[in-house]
Image 1 (cartoon, rainbow, N blue to C red):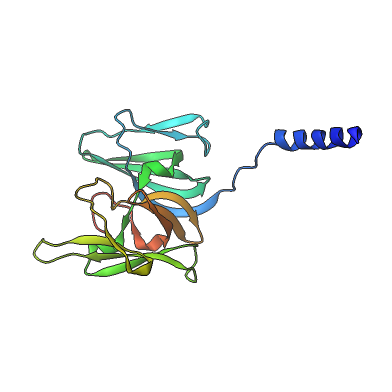
Image 2 (image 1 turned 180 degrees about the vertical axis):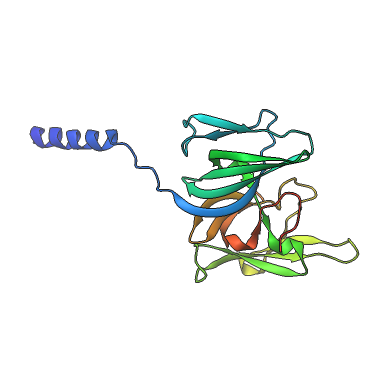
Length: 206
């Protein structure tokens, strides 16, 4: 009995000591922009974790400047960028490394046009269950524009992006099968097709 207990303890210790295998990189062709306006900038790392060596820093050049990035992969909620663009002043260049998705954002294309809606999905598939609908109304003559979350049970919540900065800017959580997992308004999480997102911080997307 003692011997069995010792054996179980040894096995448990081995499993406890075994390193956790990192999630494999997934292809993620995406254009996004930096939403973390830390004055010291955000670190770009050599590996998709907080311990990765810093290989560069993305820092805003002006108070009203914007930074966009081209992404080609995702792992563990980190996104690998391959290049960047500064707007105001206009500067671009190559920089390869990883940035955590909470520091990157994009936009819903529906907000660039007439009344429309976008499904937020439970899984990265067109057959997935719909968690909620984002609905956009551009208003008339520059007035009455609004974005809403249409929730199950007929509940409707306005996303007040004028009062809460960044409320209508989804941050990035993951990438799979041509879909991007986003967090909107700090609480709505789910998947949308990458093609339905607009990553530019300065222009609308077709």
